[in-house]
Every structure is written in C-alpha cells, then in structure tokens.
Amino acid sequence: DAKTTQPNSMESNEEEPVHLPCNHSTISGTDYIHWYRQLPSQGPEYVIHGLTSNVNNRMASLAIAEDRKSSTLILHRATLRDAAVYYCILTHDMRFGAGTRLTVKP
Amino acid sequence: EPEVTQTPSHQVTQMGQEVILRCVPISNHLYFYWYRQILGQKVEFLVSFYNNEISEKSEIFDDQFSVERPDGSNFTLKIRSTKLEDSAMYFCASSPTGISVLTFGAGSRLTVL
Image (cartoon, rainbow over all chains, first blue to last red; front, side, top):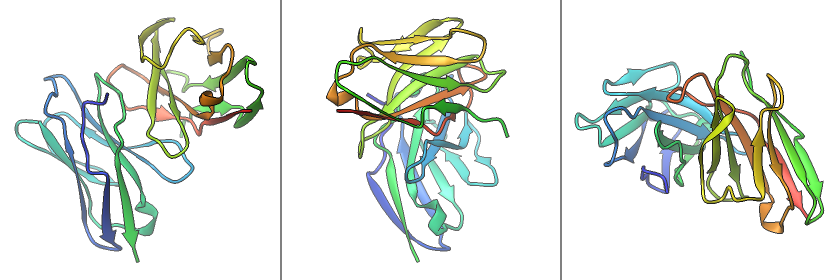
C-alpha cells in the first residue's frame, strides 16, 4: 500500500486557488515528496517535487510542513484543464494511492 | 522534450496467450518501472528495474510476469499466459536516478478476451 493518504475528491471554481493536501506521516528523512497528475485517458505526468523547503514552478507550488508529515499542492488559479487525479508519492516507495480527483467548475 | 514511448498502444489477445509490451525509456535514464491501471482504478506499481535486474516488485508481479532490457534501448514487460484480469492500461516510466522524477509513457492498453 502507498505511504500517502489524500482526500478522494475536491472541487474548485475556475480561476480560484486550490489546495490539495497529502499526509505522509511515515516519511523518512531522505524521501522526496513528488506530485503527479493524471488527466483523463493519459498517463501520469510530473507536477512538482520537494524535500524540505517550499517549491514553486510554472505549474504549481508545493508547501511542505515543517515536520514533513504532510504537504499541500497549490494550484494558484485553477483552469478547466487542471481537472485530473492528483497523486502524491514518496521516492523510496513509488507507489500511488487513490489520489484526489479534482473537479473544476466553470 | 525527451519522452518515453510505448508500443503497442492497444493490444487485444486471447486468454492464455503471451504478450510482450515494449517501452523505450529516455536515453540517459537508468531506472525503469512498470505500472498498471485497471479501468477506473488507481495506478498500481508492478516492478522497478536497475542495472539489469529487478530492484523491487509488488505482489502483483508474480511468475506470470517478467521484465527484460534486451538491448540498450528497449525495456519489455512479458506476461506469459494472460488472464482476463490482466486487462488494464500498462504504463512504463523511467528516471535518471532512483529518487528522481518519473517520466511516464502514454501507456499500452491490453484487452484479454
């Protein structure tokens, strides 16, 4: 089983920020936290990753708790194309949980 | 941008037949993975491969499955005697190191009749 837990689903309105949480209470000191997303009928694609510090890229931001037992993927302005299943995984596990299905409403 | 390519995109086979799914990872990547996704379900880890040997496998990856890197570019998943429940999307992924970001292929859809 995956070492991460996420809510099954979340909804957002278009153009609004979305915060997708992930719990990883058994994370080890050397685990990176990776986020991927799977658009309908596609393979998973990389979104962002981090170790301890918060990270930003063109797709999203990643906020990592100080104890590293949880993290939050932030989409600053959700678009309809962001509707997908979002997964967080740990590098020494590489197993996907059920992920969070994000629905974006126009 | 470099990509992972998988063939075939869709294969239909009869139960009990052998199937080989092929993947061409990104050329400078050293770690290779197979995952599967049954329709409507989550992505499941099957196996990871490094330095010409399996580094980890899941309980799904039983004796019916095998992986091989027959040459410097291809990475294959073989299912010896397919079962109905093997029908799924199979994704190959590769990464430069064991802790790096995974790049996934578009997948091979296997339908077992």
